[in-house]
Image (cartoon, rainbow, N blue to C red):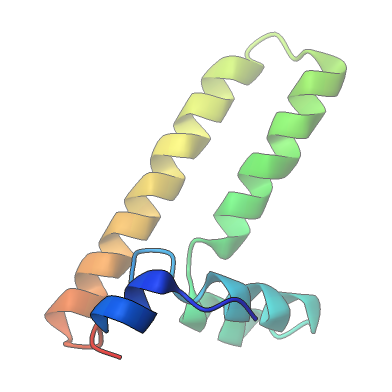
Length: 92
């Protein structure tokens, strides 16, 4: 797995730390662990899948849906990062 430069040099987790482990857990079929490691994994995959489908099929309101999905993924990432800060789970 790739190491996070922020975690490696600053000893602080970035907002994306946990995504790789979460994806591996998801591919193994362990949805609970995947969600626990990084809650934004499934919404992020939904966003990517819908974006590719929109590019292929040109949905009429696809661009609006993509915008809402982007905002919701950003909110999930931000809330989870704040949760890690509050619970002091940020330091490696």
